Image 1 (cartoon, helix red, strand yellow):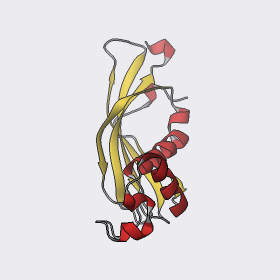
Image 2 (tube, one colour):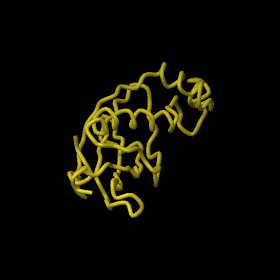
Image 3 (cartoon, one colour):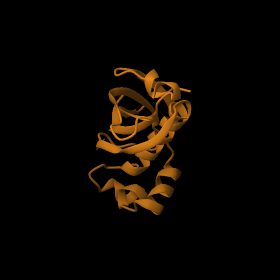
Length: 149
């Protein structure tokens, strides 16, 4: 288990792999973000994207799953305080394969609860061409090692 004390500013990793399909782009968008360029390939041709693209929320969900599977399961996570600087940088298209890159950009002990530390992590979702398609700074809460509090 990785506790707050085990994490250093500058720690970085790349991991995960998720293949995005046309069917799931449409399924997600029909349920959560039914804009024409997410649900209808013909309508998407006349959009600013020129083709069907994934919802940014779908892209965020995929990257969050990769983060959970590849990082959080090994951390003494206590949840998150939110995200800052969420940006959709490039559209995700059917057939793209996404992975993520993370870097710890800040950490500090909570002033209100010494059992917890705050770790701010930059997450970038990247496609198979190494293009950054999404980024955000996750504001994690990580348990401190019990004998260190």
